[in-house]
Length: 381
Length: 189
Image 1 (tube, helix red, strand yellow):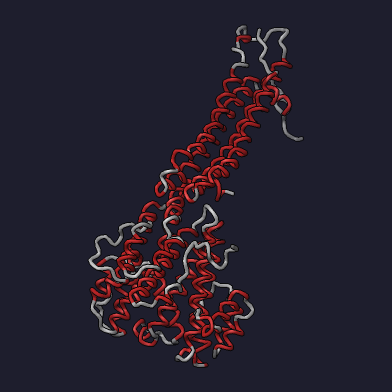
Image 2: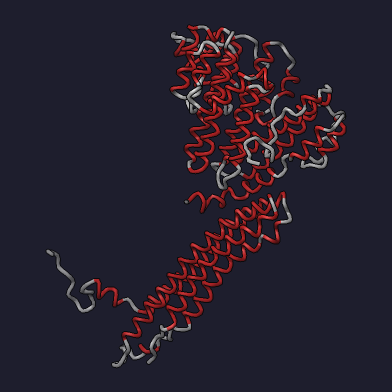
C-alpha cells in the first residue's frame, strides 16, 4: 500500500522516463524493413526513421561492429541519464545492474593479458556500462602475467572497485577450500579464469537478489523471479558446457562444479544437487525434468537438429518474456533492469541482422528474438 | 479507586464533564481546520503522484502534456471542495459576542450550541478524510493514465473514467458534509 502511495515521490519521473525509452524499441514493422535491406547503408537509412535516429551519423563506415558500438553507446547514454536522476535505493539498484558488466570487463582484461593483447585494444572492447575510472582500466593489464601479478592486481586495484567484495569473498572461499593458509597467488594459480568468472557471477547474483529482497514490495517479487530464472539458466549452462572438460570429472563434479551453482533459483537445492552429479546429457535431462519450464527448454535442445533452435535461443525467449512482463506493473524497479536487458537483446538482434546482410545469409536472418513483438509465441493472437 | 480525585470547582469530575467542557467553538473550528487542511493534503498528494509521472513521460511523448493536466485538475477539485466547505461552515459560526458579560445569558440554548459544535466538527472531519482518499486515488490513477497515454493514445479516455470514479469519492464527502452542517447554527445572544 505504501509502495503505491509514495513511490512516485522519489521514482515517478525516472519510471516515466524508462517507459518513454520503452516506446523507442524497434517494432515488428521496423524489423521487417530491416530484414529486407540489402546493404548496411539501407539498414542505416531505415534505422534513421526509428528512435535510433542519426546514431550512425558520424561513423565513417557502417559495419556490424560499428552498429554494435554505437547502439550500445546510445543505450548507455540513456542509462546514465536515468542514473543521474535516481535517488536511493534506485541508485544502488542501477549500480548493481552495472556490476555484471564490470565483472565481464575485468575478466576480459585479465584474459587479454594472458594472450598478450594490446592494452588500448582491450580497453576499447570493454563494455561501457562496466567502465571503471580510466586509471583503473589502464592499470589492470599493466600487471605482470603471473599469479603474483594477479595477487598484486587484486590487492592494489580491484579491492577498491564495486566488484572487490566479490573477489575477496571468492578468494576467501577458495583459500579455505585449498586447505592451507594459501595466499592469493596460489588461489589464482590453481583456479582457471572461467571458474573465477562463474564464481564471481554467482556471488553477484546472490548479492543482487538479497538487495532486491531488502527493497521489498513488487521489486522483490519481480526481480526475484527474473534473477532466479537467470541463476537456473547459469546452472544448466555451466553443467551443459562442462561435459567433455575436466570440470566433468567425477572428482570435480561435487566439489568444483557444484560450487559454481548460485544458491538462489528454483533449481536450488534439490535440482542443483542432481545437476551436480549429472555426468552426461541424459542425466542432465533427468535432473531438470521435475521443472516444467526447464523440461520444455531442454526439449528444444534435444530437438536442435530438427528444428534448428538452440538451447540459447530458448533461454533468450524465456528471458525476453519475463522481462516484458516486468513492464506490466507500475511502481517497482524491475523495469530498469528489464530495459537494459531488452535493449541488449535488441542490439544483439541488430548485429545479427547486419551480419546476415554482410555475409549474404538471408535465410538465417529471421532467427532473432524481437522485443515487445505482437507475434511473440507467448501472446495469444 | 485509591487515588484522590480533584474536588475543586474547576476540575472535571468525569470524562463526560471533560468533553462537555470543551467549547463548541473549539469543536467547530477544529472541524473547519481539519476539513480544509486534510482536503489540501489529499489534493497535494494526488498532484505530486500524477505530476512526477507526467513530467517524465512528457520527455519522450510531449503530446500528452495538455491532455493529462485533467488529472491534475481532478486533484485540485478536492482542494476546492475543502475551501467551499470551510467557507460554508465559517458562515454558521456566530461572533462569540454572548460572553461579553463574562457569563452566558440565563436562557442560553445550550442544546443548539453543542449540536452546532459537534455538527461542524464531524462535517469537517468527514470531508477532510474523504478528500485525502479521493486525492490519493486520483493521483495514482492519473499517474497510470499519463504513462498509458504516452504509450498508446487511445487509452487516455478509458483510464480517465477510472479517475472520474475516484474523484466521485470527494463529492460524496462534500455532499454529506453540507447536509450535516445544514441545521447547525450557533445561537446568538
